[in-house]
Amino acid sequence: MAHPVVHFEIAGPDGERLIEFYRDLFGWEIQGAGPDYWLVTAGKEGIGGGVMQTRDEMPSYVTVYVATDDLEASLRRAGELGGETVVPPMEIPGTGSFAMFRDPSGNTIGLFRE
Image (cartoon, rainbow, N blue to C red):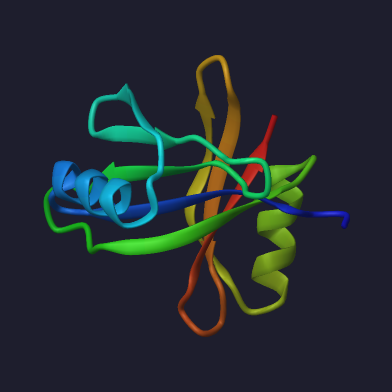
């Protein structure tokens, strides 16, 4: 697959409760990775992900991140197809870069570049 899903993210206003919920429900291993962010370790058959505590008026959400070699080109193409940029390219120190767009139905999808 040219652009595989490489990460998922589940976010809500009570990050600690989300961690406890998913750890108890699925037995996920979850480790702190920064302020209000925790990484979910992938098993042999799954992709890794994250749990995030939302801030202020940010709504709860679930999204996936798709690998791309060019964040800007992917955002531009999404726009040409009726999507819109939600988060412009941003660096994740020591990890890569990400961006987010909204598809024509309002779903938020992330892009990730190593």
